[in-house]
Figure 1 (cartoon, each protein chain N blue to C red):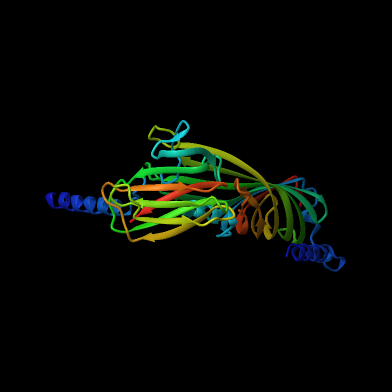
Figure 2: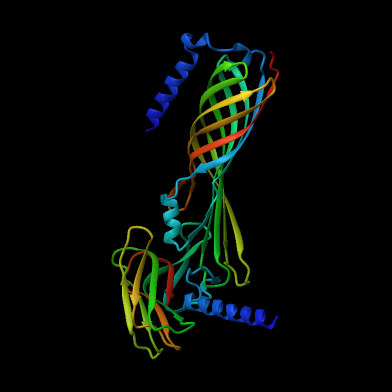
Length: 156
Length: 223
């Protein structure tokens, strides 16, 4: 009985670790949860955003309205390297980028410009920088034009 | 592709009612019959990748299950010798997809498609207890979709249901062994059913190949 309990504990711990390892460092990766006019898990540092439907009426994305727009999200864990995945529909000239502040000191340690696209596409980048315990993710728009981001994942 | 299918159907129909083959036919199969019922079960060969499913993948969904189970039910009435009309319903595609939400339970999306068609059947009663047939059908496709996502501050998910109405065309061939009132049939063919459609205009093909086995009943038929 004790042996089976121990085995159960080990398996549970292993599965918990596995889940933790695969989990995302961003809470609302789909910009799905809105508290009124703002995103519940993202902070709007600058500019204007709007909730929009994407492929389904009730599957949302964030429309980065005008320019500049800056959203931030504190990392909910640490990672030595990251896979960044962005699903977006961005017009040429909108200039949308994903940035990582590794330690939350205000300096940008890694950034990538999301290329424009004709419709929604999903793109992936490897960020060797990783993120620390006080790390922050930024989603920035610095140009004019339509820019809707449907998903932003940061997974180890 | 569709034109070639129509041509094959036309040729088969001509063969079935040609004077040359009429001598081998047994009119007792149709004499006096007013109504037939059919219920079939079987499997399907769905189209795996479409613009619709690729869009789901773009938005982070991963395919979970595809049901290959197929079902059909039909009412048949013989309008003229060797030709009948059927009101037929078929269960077509049924799929489930999941996605990591990052804010609780995984998002879930599923759909299932049904058709409600009028089919024109041309059949050859080889004997009083056996016939072969081909049929063409057209009608609406109804696809019910369900999206389970968290969209409120409460921890639970909300279910969003939608119904997409499209069309379908079908070509089927089959054979039937029957006593006076009860029979067995097998039927195979292909459905083209471009439904459901998403907000971006991408459609799924919920049809594909089907092979069904079932029971039939005949009413008002005389020996």
